[in-house]
Length: 114
Length: 114
Image (cartoon, rainbow over all chains, first blue to last red; front, top):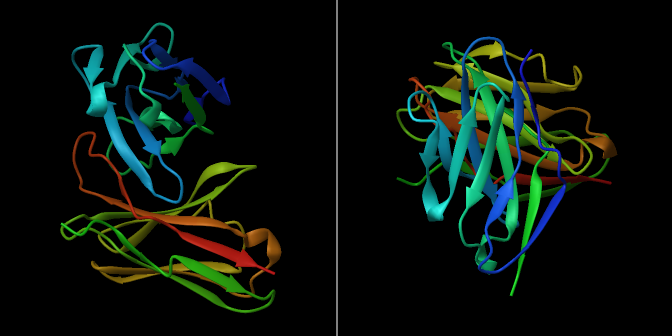
């Protein structure tokens, strides 16, 4: 069975500092990995994904994530945080085969202070 | 593109009443998913469809929950009878078939059962 773990319920960072939101996964076979962001009273918005190829993927709003197969991790990063990045972030995984569904972690609240 | 459209945005009902949530996926998307979000359990997959056919309903919590997709542009999630523990935000999402296709979420229906 596939699963996702986000070990931190909350991450606090000062504006301008780099941020990392952690994610580890478990899946049989090769994974498709995703990051989504959720703002209050809104649905989840797609940020970036890893399917294959380069382990460092770049996404929306300056975010990037690094796929590490040996550590089964897919941490979200940004070199310089903005107050507007404050939101709830979800990591998600699905198996690399047709017809599978996305399984989400519990989410990490990112709080960026000015 | 109007995105995934859910209605109503908010629903308040009394215990024992029937509740119907509605979803219009993005045109051309052939997968549709229903998720439920609560503080305690995070995002849970309830059921998903491919080409209007239910593929996996193992996440549907009880027989009180049912979902249909009569055509490619419409799906419903019904709870009958509703209970206070059903209170949550229910999201509909859709995607294309294809390697690593991203999910697109609606803004959700916030259900409160009193």
